[in-house]
Length: 341
Image (cartoon, rainbow, N blue to C red; front, side):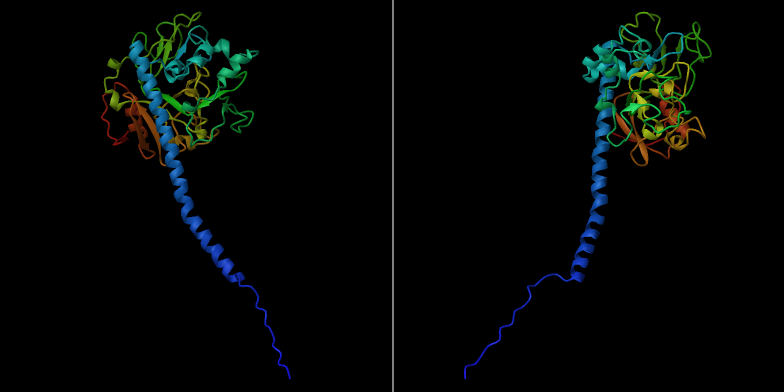
């Protein structure tokens, strides 16, 4: 009798459902542990890039001062309520954007004659140019500053003067205007126009400066000199951040020279006494949103000082201290310890 053998076929080895679930759970846990670290590293890189932007702005302002022996004016005005060029336009040649400066011709034309209905397409394109050095990479502000892009209702405050013909490009950096009125023949509280109200000097590095040649603006009126910052350039803020929650800013200039809110001079300047916490107020519950500094970085705002150094200042710093830091000549003690780099 021949013996027969029975062959047994084994199923190929593999993962059971339980094993797969365990592996997936482990991978999920690892991703959960790694993701915050990755996000932190990315934000650190973005914050470093923002710091570099401020340093470039500081270098441009100091080069302007070296050539013209004065800081640029915060903005110009001509005795009427109109849109006017601001400090970020005046330093374009020192930001390696001479091409844009020459296209806009702020040394020959007023902003109120450029930002008009029926403007030439070249002028519209220039005013809507996104300048990388004027944008914080952590911020999500729209490229253009108007109500629709900031999702505001039609009855909300305009974001670049009254009835702007077209939106202008945004910026995340605003000049520090100061928090006190400087009295004097040519530097009085702006309750009127013409003599003696020639300069809207609020005590900061940047303020509105009268341009006596309205028909030919020249190269932009000059602002304060180094000698005018008697509190010391290393102790006075000249530029800070403003994020989307504060409506960002406009690098070209101011919306209206007679309005001191988010649609007027605060389109390019900031009142640091309205510190970053004010920007959390809703526009319709308070008109302070868009007047002060703010940041997309956590727990504070980066600032540029008048000597070109950059510092990160905590949200917890009081409005009183921020006022001291923005005034160039109030001789108030600087009681905040900031890390400068």
